[in-house]
Amino acid sequence: MITSHSNDLYPSRIYPQPKLLERRDPVIYNREISQSEISAEQLAFYEENGYLFLDSFFEEAQIAVWKRELAAILEQNKTAAKPEVIREPGGDEIRSVFAVHRDYPVFRQAALQPRIQAVVRQILGSEVYVHQSRINVKKGFTGKEFYWHSDFETWHAEDGMPRMRALSCSIALEDNNANNGPLMVVPGSHRTFVSCVGQAPDDHYKSSLRRQEYGVPDQESLKHLVEQGGIVAPTGKAGSIILFDCNLMHGSNSNITPYPRSNIFIVYNSVENKLTVPYSGQQPRPDFIATRS
Ligand SMILES: O=C(O)CCC(=O)C(=O)O
Image (cartoon, rainbow, N blue to C red):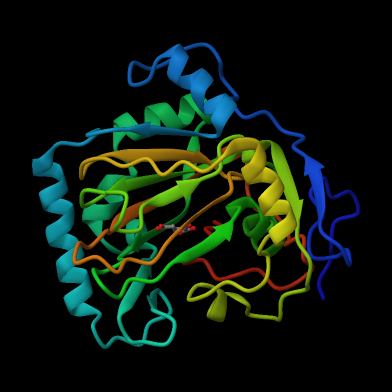
């Protein structure tokens, strides 16, 4: 164990029973419209629901460049034994590739897209940096699910992210339809922190990136959140983006259709919310999952 925090607003993995705790942080940090990409109404939608879907945000030509790079990365890493390359549970196919903004200039440029950054800075009310990036591949027929989770629970417990002042942007590289495992979100769930049960083993990330077992919400809490907010799976064209709050409950089904569904995930954190010692008291996860410098 290493030093832990005496005053934790979002304790998790320490109680014998799950708890539902009220969010103690704003959702929108700058209400004064400071960019031209989203309107005050869209900002209000994000605040209330915890996400915002923008169809066809990027043009086909841009998506074609990113898809070519993705194909090259998958080819290069087919048999690579690198920590950044995560394979499907029970198989060898690539599930995710982490730190793409660090390792591939094309994806660095994606993470630095001024149009996305403008929206993110609006919501988080400060300069931002990339906390994590990855490509989730989800191939046709064999791509596996991502079980329900709040990212913040993990980032807080395992990475030491102090407050809810981060968000994810998922860029669709293929059309997302109702069947090929689109992202599902529970609107409004970002206002409740689900304190999860069970202390994860050291180096939990080595298994959790394939299939998460700790920091997973219990079924009663999930049922409660879904009864309140329902489940929405925004679908649209390649080039669509979903921005969602770090504490929004989300997940996705496996893809048994012939249609692949890959996306670029970029997580932005406020520069005023930099990582500290993990709240779980364990060693921090490596830099390719959680930027520390
Ligand atoms: O790609 C997906 O469908 C979900 C991914 C996800 O939840 C995550 O990467 O945290």
